[in-house]
Length: 50
Image (cartoon, rainbow, N blue to C red; front, side):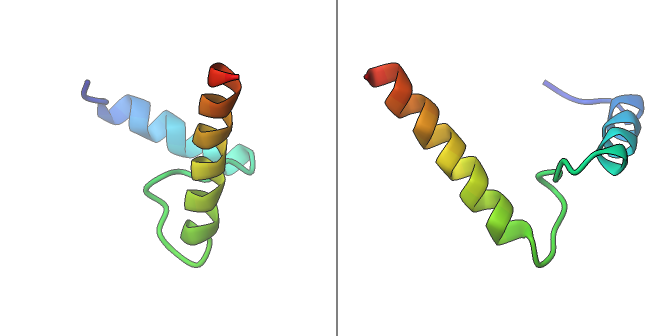
């Protein structure tokens, strides 16, 4: 599924309004973001299997 430029621009604008971290936002917080995503995906898998 490809995302068009308008979607990308709106996603970036939306993220600036909130504290959402975009997956392609590189920098000091990337490791923190990856850990949060990993915890979220693991959490949902555990909840689904329980």
